[in-house]
Amino acid sequence: MDSQPQQPAEGDGPLAGYRVLDLSVNVLGPVAIQILGDMGADVIKIESPDGNYTRQVGPSRNPKMGALFLNTNRNKRSVVLDLKKPDARAALLDLVRSADVLVHSIRPGAAERLGVDYEAIRAVNPRIIHASSSGFRLDGERRDWLAFDDVIQGASGVAGMMARATDEPRYYPR
Image (cartoon, rainbow, N blue to C red; front, side, top):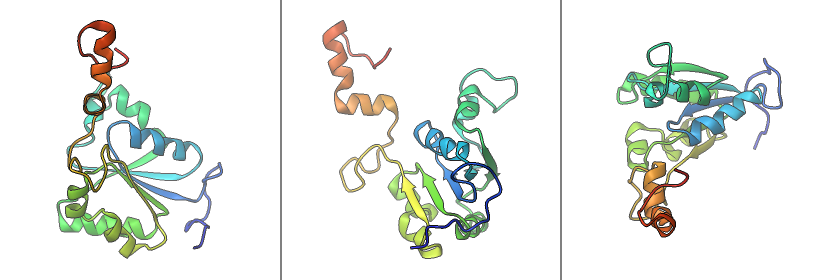
């Protein structure tokens, strides 16, 4: 496996020259990938036409530029692609050909339907690092469940454990 980036280095930092495609939402993926951008990687955030819902979370001076979005997406370029449309999927695959890493937080069944699952991406670029974040096991009964912090705390028993201290279920760290 060739460990050198496909592009010449343009910026500073240990990851200069590496291209990362970010199809993640919420907090986990965007923060992790933001760090790659901080280290010099060329990060391209790919959003649906509706935009990432975090654009509307928190105070903002401009519509769709909420604090949560801005605080988890620095050092990223952005492109809008409706991956439900064939021409947008083709555009994504063009980006995949020149990328070193692709990260998404799309549920397994949906990832397959959109063509961003491991097999589909690897067929276009066999040397790409493909990472997906999921709250539950990919082969378990909860495979297709959405996984937000509150869901994970409830499913893991954390909310119930907090009830021991307060006599009512609650989420940590509230």
